[in-house]
Image (cartoon, rainbow, N blue to C red; front, side, top):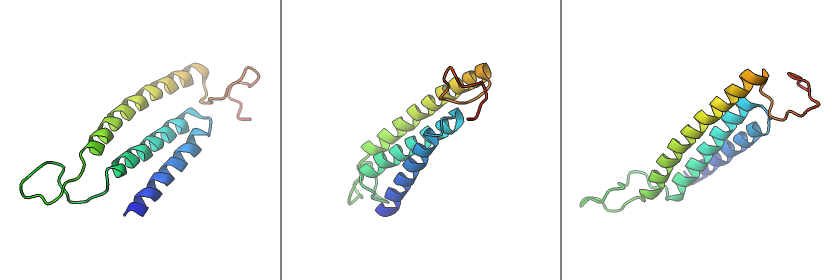
Length: 115
């Protein structure tokens, strides 16, 4: 199970990095979301993968899982959702103002030019 989680983290991070390097705003947003998912999986896996163990102390439990990574992941999900909402609004404003979604505009590049 650890191998599958490691492959998923690597695949999400690689796809996110590829999309961030596309120099367009909408793939950048999806890429940042994928990278935040990979970080969340990494944080969750750092707390030791132990399926079926309770995070709350009880008299019947034989072992426990660490609840701290779960709390960190929940906090990171909320923060990444807010960050994504702000970036979507900024990208939408830039697209409505400039008429395109390129992020590497220079003074010499014509508006809407794909070169």
